[in-house]
Length: 404
Image (cartoon, rainbow, N blue to C red; front, side):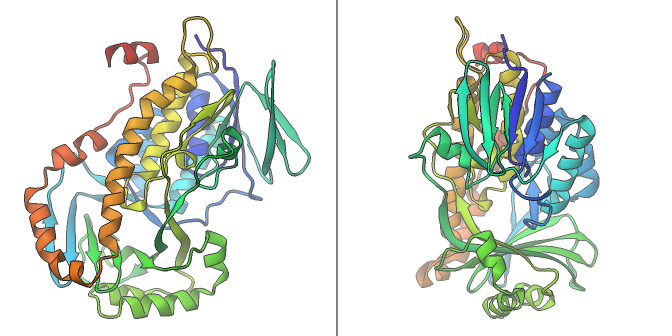
């Protein structure tokens, strides 16, 4: 039986608004605290929401809004040099290509309409747990108290370090992320996503509408640069690097040349989160990138964050936050529901990452390897369980575990 009535959600990115909205649906009063001065709509570029992620948004009533604003991807292909290979897909699964800024704003606005309060300039610096719940202390001298505190504060999570001071941090993949929405007269039909292995670097692209292309670059870079560090370097510098890197690639070279400084989205270092030993402690728990951030190669980062926020809300709806009597804690059951799934997807993505920065020998044999992979890939086995995952909001968590 639940004992949770109130929750503090730390972080207002993707996971924060979704988690707070799901908590509200579960009858739990939630408030979001964001360290930035306002909504961070300007961070990130394009991303693809997997079918499981959009289905999870349906639980909180946000799925249709995302479908309206997204470009539907029904086919995928792999490009190696001048050769293209059609990738097998699941017949009933489509991706939704969406600008991260627009996705973030839509989820934020959806939460506001649901009645979720947001507070800004609230950088968490410490917590106190006590009989009445947990109190969060912020850098501006203010504090807030609730039954539980949820860390949705991203890959550099403060809450993660408060739960476990020895918790691992994110690992750098050796690549920086860039993206842009550009005009192009190339004959690229909407509905197809292309994963391209250029001569010197990987990139991907898709048409959101005729003549309008969303593309993203994974630029090998030996030096780690955070978002703020990468953005401190003028966009003109990065455009020169991107144009040199993709100069010999078709159509990557044209994408780079057609990207303007105003259009370029710089996201800095691309990360992958190693397994986090402790997802919760006492009245604190982690959700989203703070606890599982597979590399962007997974195509599942945002979708997994959305799923976890909703599953956490279900657990807090049906179970006590801390063990009581014969009931396990909501946090323990939440981890049980999520850990195996998210770590399996992260492991798959880590393998893909290695192919993005091949050496000279691997680059020569890559076309053959890719043809063999596409020919023998069992998409149902590889992606079926990932993309067909659905959350049954109305089922009680106890019954779901008993049936598992």
